[in-house]
Amino acid sequence: MSSFSNIKYILSAGLMLFAFTGCQKNNPNMKNSGGNLLTGDPHSFLQTNGATVKHLELALEVNFVEQTLNGWAEWTLNPNKSDTLILDTRDLKINAVYLNNNSGPATFSMGKNDPVLGQALIIPINRHTQKVKIIYKTSAHAAALQWLKPSQTKGKQLPFLYTQSQAILARSWIPCMDSPGIKFTYNAKIKVPANLMALMSAENDTILHSNGVYHFSMPYPIPSYLMALTVGNLQYKSLGKNCGVYSEPETIKEAAFEFTDMEKMVNAASSLYGPYAWGKYDVVVMPPSFPFGGMENPRLTFATPTIITHDRSLVALIAHELAHSWSGNLVTNKTWDDFWLNEGFTVYFENRIMEALYGKEYADMHEVIGYGELKKTLKEMGENNPNTALKQNLKGMDPDDAVNDIAYEKGRFFLLYLERKVGRAQWDAFLKEYFNHYRFQSISTEEFLQFLNEKLVDKNKESASKINLNEWINAPGLPASFPVITSNLLDDAKQLAVTFSEGKPLRTASTSKWHTFQWLHFLRNLPEKLSSAQLAGLDQAFHFTNSNNAEILCDWFQLAIRNNYKPAYPAMENFLNTVGRRKFIQPLYALMKATGQTETALKIYKNAKPGYHQVSSHTIDQILVSE
Image 1 (tube, rainbow, N blue to C red):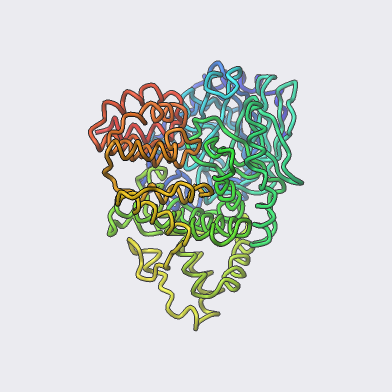
Image 2: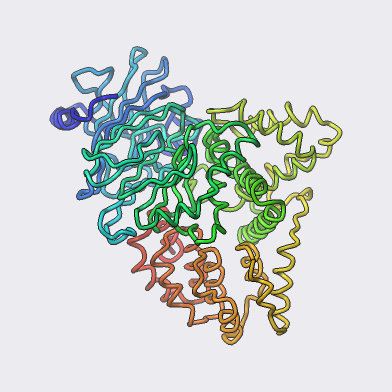
């Protein structure tokens, strides 16, 4: 690992040398997405036959005043015969490039700027080039970096930083081959203010360093979207032999309570599909602006605080991110067109973990809720929409704009369909072999199907004789072979919704031990049109407006918006100002616009937007601001 003490010298030298003519050129001939110089991944500037990377040495200093990262990235290359190394960048200031530790700077050029892909960093090399060091600085507006003021944290005293690299945002804080098809190991040295702790998707310390310098190592190859960094006032609490939780001190006790079954989850997952490959499994609870439920960074899941409900009712999200340690992190989709290989496998695996811990009735409820969300997505997109096929074609699109329940739920039900065709025992043996065979590799849908045919279908011709892969992978909508999904517990919740719709008295005592899934099924089976008196009656009986459960609140607020139920609006406005998770805020803003309440939505959004991550604000801008 290179010494961090040399960074300022290298930066100064790089800046002076950069001023000489000939060090950097714009390259107008470098094509953007769809250009004839690009092959392979449509969301990266890398070339199929070009040089590739295998290891990263990273040294960065975190500057909260400027809201920038400043330092260098040194790539070790795989042996190659190429004359060019092409890296992805977005809004990076490239100060200098050095080859093989040479004292003088190398020439480089920047490709044409693409609003989605950024710019290619084009570096001439030869077959003797083994290492390439880039001196650079991030923009204060880097899309992957979320800088929080002290007032935006739980403790209100110290600032906070976190990254979100998926899908193609790693290039905004590291010059890299920003494609899930390229994997590399890394070491890093991060300098932060002395009163803050730094964590990465790597081996982490659990104590504060008084000098503010943290060292990291990731000895297993990962793709760029799993590069992660967070810096804040964090504490650690062990939850077992090889797992634990980080959070701000104000929430560490409740986070530890919520995730108390995490070690059981790791053990259950390992017993299903092979040993956990990454050493430790830790979770860090993020500030409310975090745009996703969780992000499966190796060894360090980033998790939304919305799963802390004080009753452990939403911990399936932890099982989901843990499952990514096999499906996604260990075996990765080669391009974002193959996203279902990450998420469909993970939703299926998540439910198997939860079934092992909490029983089949839980798993049945999870499947029915997922089926309902899939049907809703299909209704919105149109059942004949080609984008409802599992195999996608996202060329020319930001892959983040294509994230929906198709990859997650249709992918999950495809695997459930296969399980039922061949039987769970044979299916589990196949999955275990699949994860082991492709460990630390990236694969395409076509490669998976070939492996599936060779290892499962061809060996089980009688039970698998009627398997129709095409209608799942390439055809839109729900296939004719879609498995039957049922849950007795959710049937009871639906019946209570029918009872309410018929004006009959509610049996509130029967709901005292309901799970979140039952409440969601109840709310989703109520009539869309309800009177204010009916909504007030529901709120009086079940206290929805004051719920601590973000899943329930999101569904309840949608009912309130549809029926202009004003008593719920102050709580909804507070929710939108304190929660940045896109899953929850997107439907509320969209529904306000759809019901003629755009002015209300814009008023709330104006106050809430500064606390949202770019991933979330980009989506809401498209709903409320874009024509």
